[in-house]
Length: 400
Image 1 (cartoon, helix red, strand yellow):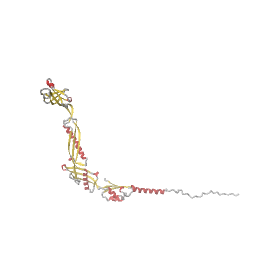
Image 2 (tube, helix red, strand yellow):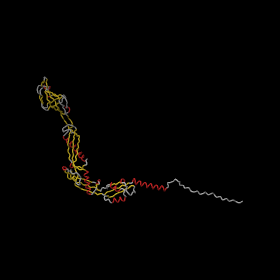
Image 3 (cartoon, rainbow, N blue to C red):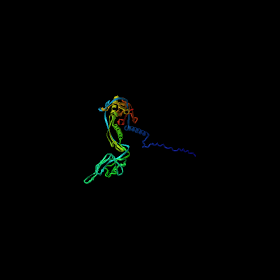
Image 4 (cartoon, rainbow, N blue to C red):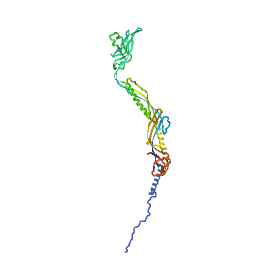
């Protein structure tokens, strides 16, 4: 039997065409992403330049230190500032105020005083010697320092009318207990005679003023010292009031007078306090601070043509050498030193340099003799020219 040989070969897979794995709708390839990013960056740069670009230009002008010593006349008749004259004028102030002061404390021993009416009911004139005593109902004795003559009683229309006389009496002793308002008096010296009951007296005014102890009294020294204190205070206030104005005062020309003085209590009056009211008028020769500054600027421009003073560097002093207040004239020595620079107008510079390239700008500044140095800062930093809009260019003038 013939053997059959079977050659079995496994079937081969047919080659299939490879499919494109990229989806038909896919767009964002790496190249495209990079390209788009570059476009965005460029757009942002252009947008920033057009909308946010700005520049700062700092300019330092050349400076020169100048100093000067000048004799200047401050003249009342001058109407403007020149290189050697300043207008002057008299300035005034007026201060009025009142102030209360304490009186002197003194030891006081005072006798009460007052007036009484002495009656005579007898038919004869009665004469009482000086220092005749009158005793009050409270047994206090008062004396009349004068000789007293009392007319006799008379009849009028059938009625008896007592003779009388008014006299001043003084208490025999000091003290408040002798102060009385209404009382009747007898005459102890007539005791034992018929006149004792016919001669008597009564008060017609209060008897007062009696005092023993510490009291207050205005003295001449009190008034003198009080006036001195209030005048000193008002004079000081008057000077300060002048300083408050925009003037420089010459102390040598100040005159002050106190007027309209009122004193509530005169020396000798008994009171614990008194008030003084006074007015003080102040007059002085002066000149305006602004005029002195203007004069210094004129002198500075004389030293440096067209120059301007850098005010923080200004050192200025003056001293009166000759004073003639009656003529309205004072001569002063003016000494000053300051940095002076040629002014740079920021608006003009800004208008000229806007839109200029940095190279052209540096060249332009190098041709300006009055400029010492500059510094230019731009944003974005890679800008090579200034913005064309002057509003986006900031110019600063700085002084070292």
